[in-house]
Image (cartoon, rainbow, N blue to C red; front, side):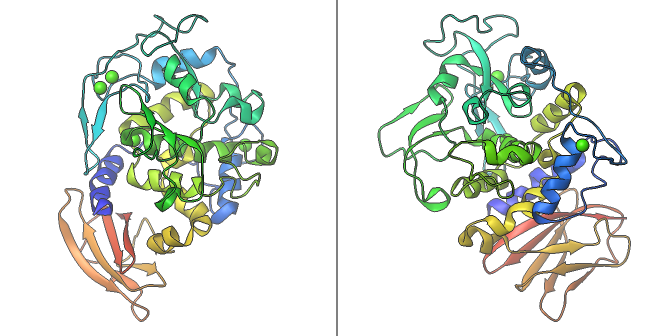
Length: 379
Ligand SMILES: [Ca+2]
Ligand SMILES: [Ca+2]
Ligand SMILES: [Ca+2]
Ligand SMILES: [Ca+2]
């Protein structure tokens, strides 16, 4: 059911899709970890001889606060221009991935109550810079320390409460801490996708789970060649998979269930304007599956399947859908109206789209193990 709701969020993402420069991802042609390395070359600070080469800039640590004034502003919930802090923004994510705002317990205005080394002994006193990937994992080295793609403004107290804890689901039936917007700290749930880790974890609210997941996917791609020197419980020490189980399953789950929002698109564009690099997983969420699908635990992998749909954009009367399972296909138009149904089997791997006019569609592919929705562009 959740996947069905994904349609409408993808619809929003499709209509507001922005704004990598033309050709930015042209060299991202592979799959799996090859694709990840190609994305790394696109977003890093090395000249790799790409046709469209953008070199990432290190603007230094103090520049984060400058970048935040454009990248982390509440234009979505209170919509009042105050600092957008994932650890204190009160908002409910609805089952259809729309949001219902709730009044925040406190708000920050940029430049006022920025951390000055004092206070932060309770919520709402000071804001500072939260490294969603802890600084200790990379010995506070630059340019990682200064990279706004995974560093965000946050309440100083909640930031300190998180410390270096990994992100996961908290077992709320055990003793735990809850902060003003519902952010949690406590024992790992250690079941379902989070099975396999015992220890304290930190859980952002649903609205921001995918945002944080995509920050992690960015980090392990941007700094791929250094991952074997980084030390953190969420990492596996490899340059390829990079994210250790069960955290890869958890982040994948968060990425899937909290799709890219306008807030992230705007944030990506604002950071690109400063740092000259982008988060590919916000621009193209499908990259996550393309890279890590074979690294997910079996249960998740079977749900996701290995489904390829091509060509896309489609300029002929058919698209090929490769799957190792039979699929029931539903095609939705931009208004969310179902415009076509079909079947994909081992004998029928093409979907006839001759009656569809040019435009963006959402193709929901249902198997006995689950469903996934892909965006299709008809040219
Ligand atoms: Ca490069
Ligand atoms: Ca707010
Ligand atoms: Ca709010
Ligand atoms: Ca989100």
